[in-house]
View (cartoon, rainbow, N blue to C red):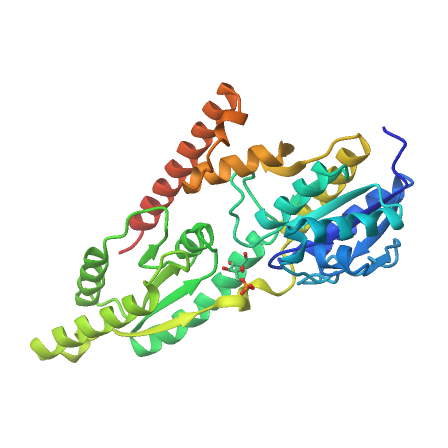
Length: 366
Ligand code: F6P
């Protein structure tokens, strides 16, 4: 173990996620147990620039494991993207004799982490975002809790849809990723899901709803990922209007599937973290400290097939960009042939899993 670490900083940045507190607790307790002091940096990178931080003791992080949100607060700090802001942040770290940083958040947070690492501050990232949109890891902290929150809310909507023989189109968060939408659609018995990863056949969806209504089905749930633009509200109106016209044409009021729209939005980002998020956060927090103290930097902690592993932040960024089709010029040239082949395989596998999961949903809608 490298001996140079006397003090490390920990921050949470970007959209908050349930389980971030559990990760901060794990980082703190693991570092203290290894003889390293910890500073909690408030408001993400903003706290580094403004010198807003507190020493974290073992007791300071007591009772935090079950708290939603982040007690260190969060921010998307634009000033940190500029060199001047970064230099202010580094000066603060030096003043406090902070030798390394654990940054908990999503891809924006990791961009900041890699910038710090490039300027000589060893930094390790921990994926904390409800979106599960970090391609290098199977799971991000907060994803499981957010899905459970979506599921609980949709279960409530279903009750009232059943009473009134209605449909509810529910838009869920996830940014560009359909992970929350497709999984909760299955868990809630939705009739369909609209996600960025799978082509959606709107007519087929409406035909299915009409067919099922003819067979006597009362309630319908359609889950839409916010990443699919101009879809959820429009789809709700369309289902409502087409079935209303049909009911008038057939002079059969039962064929009108009155359709409501609901955007769950930030409601599903709060609340107490689930068991699996607390465990994931604890494993990742401890591993992040071990990586820092072992002299490693510019890495994120990932979970792959149930194992906690590490991935270079640059590799993870290229992988994400390759997946989203937003690669910047020259990025691939910095990767080896093997890495590129591995990334392609990961992306193919991710696409296959999405297609298979969507098929699973279709297989059980009747
Ligand atoms: O990244 C987490 C997330 O909740 C996304 O799902 C969502 O698109 C975005 O953040 C919302 O951001 P804000 O909290 O700034 O409105």
